Length: 272
Image (cartoon, rainbow, N blue to C red; front, side):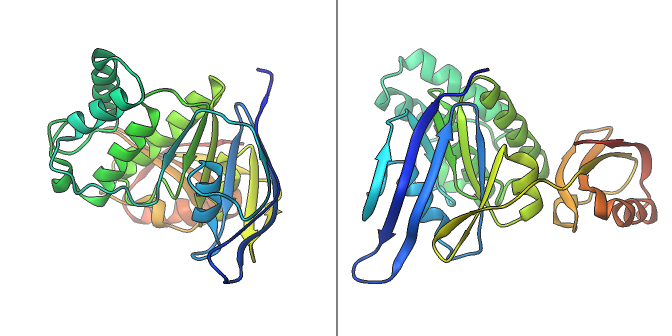
C-alpha cells in the first residue's frame, strides 16, 4: 500500500493564555496507513497535541497542512447523557451525514464487537469509565475516518477490549487509515507503532526502535490481569487461551510467574 501524507505540522507551538508554551516547534508528518505512537508523562502536553491534530485546538504558531476526515477519542469520554449507547451513536452518525439505517448498523456492529456491558440499549449515564470508552471508540469508527486520533485509548478497558482495539487498529491501518495514539508505556508505544515519538518539555523526539517481543500462549490458570505486569506489551484472552506479547528481556520472569500461578505454557514464539 502506497503511503500518502494526510497532515503535516511544521514548527507548531501552543500556549494557553500568557503561560509558557505547552508545545514547542513540533514537526510531524502523518501518512495514510501509518500508526504514530506518542509517549509522554502526565502533563507533558500529549492531549494538547492530539487536540491540535484533530482540529479542535488552533496552534499559537507554526503551520498545519492537510484536512483529512478526522475522528477523535478523548482520554475520558463524557457519558452523562440519558440516551442509550445505540441512540447516541445513531444520532452522531446522522450528524455526520450517514443514513439512519447505516448509522444503526455500524453502531450495532461496534457495540457488539467491543461487548458493551448491558448491550446497546444501556443508558450512557449508567456506564463505567471503561464501557463509556468503548462507546467513544465506536463513535470515532462510525464513518471510517482518514485519521483516527486516540488519547490513552486502552485506559479503563477490560483485557478483552484492549486486544480488540489493538486488532482494530491493525485492520484499519491496512485499509489506509492513519492512527495517532498516546500512552505512558514505552514498550506498548514501540510495539504498536510504525513511527514512535516521545513528548518531552513540549518537544517531540524520536523514541527509537522497538525492542523485540515474544508471543506466549497460556492456558488453565486463574483470572489474571497480565497487562499490569512489567514486560507485558499486550494481552488477549478467550475461554481456552491467554496470549501475551512480552518484551524479550522480560520473557523468563513472565514465564516463571505464569508457571508459579498455575498456568500451562502452550507456546513461546518470536513475535517481532
